[in-house]
Image (cartoon, rainbow, N blue to C red; front, side, top):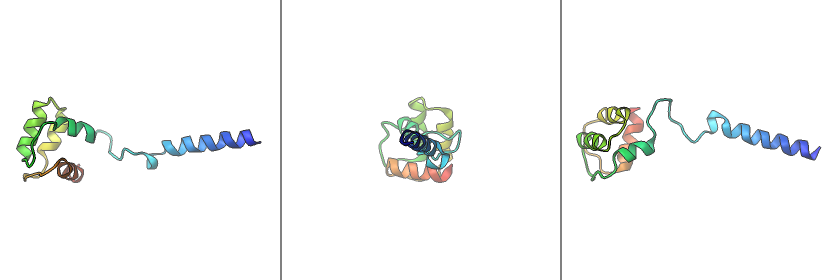
Length: 92
């Protein structure tokens, strides 16, 4: 019986970790990955503008979804990668 209980507990843990509510990735399908966004903006100097963010993403050969997302951001100065990420989460 102990072996059966261990097997069931292992299955429960596996099942729970695969449950959507326990997923670490809270993006909707089709949304760019935050790591890909930061990679697209590699080398940018802060503070910066939306236009400079989009230009840097193009220069870094970012996916068009990422460039489009950046171009939809409000037109103001961004003082850090965290500020960009925060605004992106609001924009999506």
